[in-house]
Length: 266
Image (tube, rainbow, N blue to C red; front, side, top):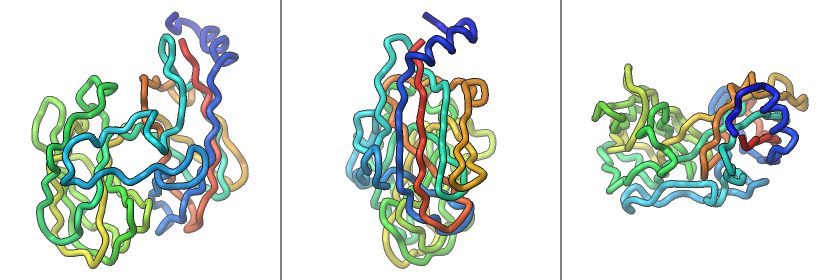
């Protein structure tokens, strides 16, 4: 049955999947910077770095991918109806669906074409509307300067470019940097190439296309917060999503983050 009343949500919550997550997220480089939970230990276990950007298509992730928050596909349709989170430091926890990733892009100045990048997973039926592009550090890297330009395909429009005007120097493992979409852009369907303006001293970078699901602010360390379906906006969880966390820390300290997701099938 579809959701038609608040009573439908209340009844479904009594039978909801309650998914527990505990992640030890490494320290942020700076207050307000972003860290991925993908390589973090805890429950679920750590994921692995994706194939290199030259390795061809097949980078898509799903709920079966190691590192994803596990859940059972709905008999009708899944919805995130309640979210609890707490952390050892203050910060903001965002839940994303990891759609596509690659790794191993060098830091030497130049243009790096993504070899036969393939399509977004079949669960994305709108060609990437509202999808975002992030730099994701699957390894640490050395000092850097200059710009990073991501040339990508936008659904229904064609070629677009997102630019980080000043890349983060010496990014840590797990660090993420959002790439602003071109003004007017509505999403990301496919990554074409990466252009760096200056040579970085060591390491490599990865890229991930992700789609936002929900976020929750944790204003005080050790004090949890709960959002109900109305506060969350009742986001739908389509089948096979590869759910993971992006953490924005309020201190330069490692964080142990706990969350419980209540997923209803209605």
